[in-house]
Image 1 (cartoon, rainbow, N blue to C red):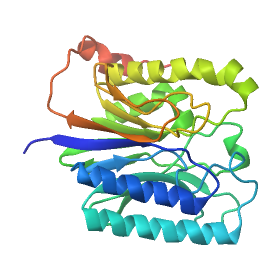
Image 2: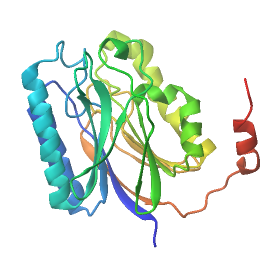
Image 3: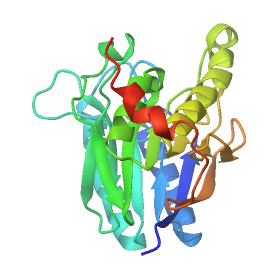
Image 4: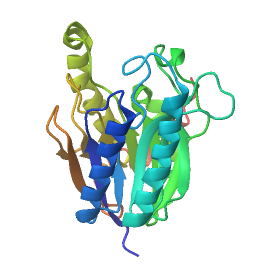
Length: 270
């Protein structure tokens, strides 16, 4: 069986209006399907908007809209026979604060898995609950993993995915919309640091990475895809909505100069 996959990596300007976010998601699902993509990958909190940036309270009407939106995305996935990975917050049970999560919907419209962001920034802790389990799933014989935004700062998470046998990582960001003064001091720097760090971890752990992001004003970096050798396979234009199409070939060989020591080094105790 050919272990190739045509993926679509999304970016658009996420905001507080759930209906507008959902309309953008629907539009890009349809466009990805027309290009015969088998999976489309969306940014962090792309349905709900981001707590503290886009809204200041969790209100019942918004939660109803989110649940309705999830159902509509499932129907579209089934209609167009496409996998969909998208971000939203989600309350489970009587939680005071929701999870910041990625839903993985398969081509039958079923929830294949849900990944709840495990490692939250200090800011995130005011708005979200921490998840516990890594998000691992398989499509076309390719083992896939999930991470969200702030988790890029921890190389241990990429190494954990390597040990799980992950070959393709989907990592979603909401890294944009900074006030101008913050962008100058922090966001501009992150626009160089994050892609470099992610590319390094792709090369060190030998997996493909699809990195989606909001295209909001002061976007730190555009959505991109990198190969298991760290090379950029493609990227979108900053601050502009779009879809990046990439063919993933899980059986393609890449030079691996650390293969003989990777497992030994990963067992070092400290």
